[in-house]
Image (cartoon, rainbow, N blue to C red; front, side, top):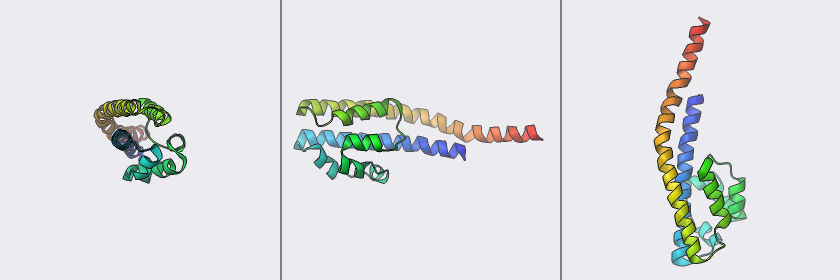
Length: 143
């Protein structure tokens, strides 16, 4: 059970990073091409994963910073810091600055996603084999 839970968490983390890449890219494109305000962009965005975890509803009601702070997500490490910085700075600059911020965030998140995808394959293999081996060891010790 432990291995399955950890594998599910790994996959959710990858799904979250991917969903936030789409979200940040959408915000950047809408700011660049349509010069829409952030609340209007968030209201128009639709992503099944971000909607299911409650982030989009919270962002529509309370804003990006509040939604980010109150959401329970599996994203950790650098990607969490990147998104936190993006959400706290989005909508406060000139058009060029906003586009650069979105591009940088998407680029870094894409690199992190690629690295995490490669690492997750090894982690999944470990989570599939180690718990049964430990259980087998305990059984052998008890016998």
